Length: 213
Image (cartoon, rainbow, N blue to C red; front, side, top):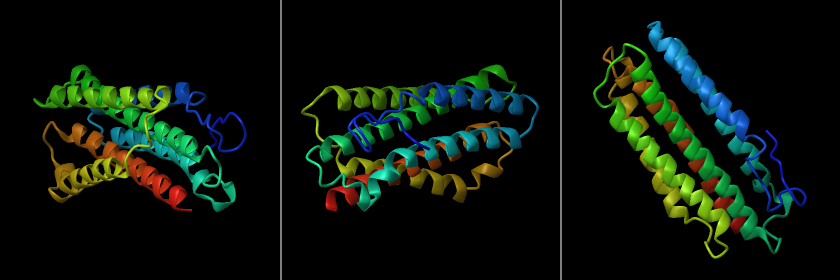
């Protein structure tokens, strides 16, 4: 998926702005389909709705990061390579914020607009909202603070490992096979976890491959 870039290929102006309306629309449609599926007692539709959104987010992330991994791009040799990498990582941060916001919205919507109940739904919804807001603020700081350095690789690794461990527990404990009211929440955790792990991997590759080339 191509990104809008100002100032030539792989320029400093890599931006999610042209795709933002479509990403927000896809998120809203995903949540709507999840609510409809849960309301009908259909476990397949929520999973498909969440999976398609995650595929879109991952594809967008690849469109931002993959061009920077190519040796032919010559990004590492440019005097503004740090700014280019930081802008790409900033887009990754915004995509992660979108994932958390989508997860929080799904929690609130599914457990408010359907008959499904789970006592921890709103706690996780608030948690997702806080994560989304925190990442959004960090993304703004990356764009507006000229002295703010490229995000440390350690933070990316910690974030990715935490999400991966959550997925291991979710799958290993057979939470996806539950018939309790948290089954819809587990779909959010599963697909949201996949999205975060994918974004963290892409960010880590961008931080290491480009800076070492």
